[in-house]
Image: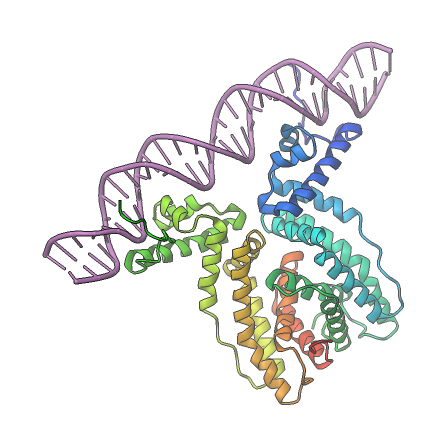
Length: 208
Length: 208
DNA sequence: CATCTAATGGAACAGGAATCCCGTTAATGG
DNA sequence: CCATTAACGGGATTCCTGTTCCATTAGATG
């Protein structure tokens, strides 16, 4: 008997080219569509296989569960992060960020997608880690605009830059999740203005 | 043949006393336990029936779905809202509120429960309405401390009181959902301080 | 206390999702 | 271009969740 392979490993890692890559792309796109239409709870691997024109078995073998599939989708989303603005003004950069987040969450497709991945992250540890990685990336992209404001002397020297960036997003996500009120530009501008005021007042200094 | 009853209605409404009430209480408590242990996605009506020492059929008939059960649980939670503090100081009241929210979300049991109901609300319209109702209640309870600060002249006269209260909770929920960092008292105090600074700066005035 | 029937609970049933089996296709390396 | 085998895909199978049926229990009413 031949020595059995040390690791069966996960499919798609030894021959990642050609068909394998096409299948992954098709499945991730189908998963996105399905999440937008039915939400995470309505996610069905069989349905996704059909949409992607791929065998059911393949989806079950490579991802195995809906949460693993969403985790992979989040890893994919984390790659393509949008570049931040560079207006030279803290208020303007924060407002641009707030409006970007607001437009994303208010968009029927993107909004539904974000709700769905947040749900998935609360159902599975791997998806949660993937979600955290995604937001770490996004926050890192925008934090420099706060750091630069600190260097210009506009904010206290020990301001926690990532925390300020998160403070812009927080009220928008909170509104989406807990109220029925619309996510409009006014809400975005208010979030940016409040975050800036908090930062100037020193509420986001490290180690209180 | 007798005229059939106009509405079969939902079970538990015509004879809500005694056994029916006991069954509801037992099921809701079992649902809470199950949510804490397995999260919303792991919720199984059969398992809940066993925990509650109630027939599966009863649970399926009276609630029908996991989301409906969570909606009922939320309605129950909305009843028992905690009374707010009355320190006479805006900063102190906001801090008390922030710490209450922080302690709730950081508590293993309560935190898991809140994550679970937020997930449920994103899977079903009725659960979503129940969740909004729950937060409407909570916000209404605390909004007066902001209104009183306005009357004392500490804040702009057209300050949106509920929005200030929500601004306190928002960063705590956002942190819980998107990062792995601990929800400690420092985070609570920062949330309260930032909300107050934003309010003083006029970021929460109505109609921006 | 007696009657009526809402509500419950056990068991059998049905439908659909996840898994397994195995032949087919195509990526990789020489 | 050829050989090797990773990865795919259709179909049968298993397992589990939700439903239906009907006998039993116990609120509600006079």
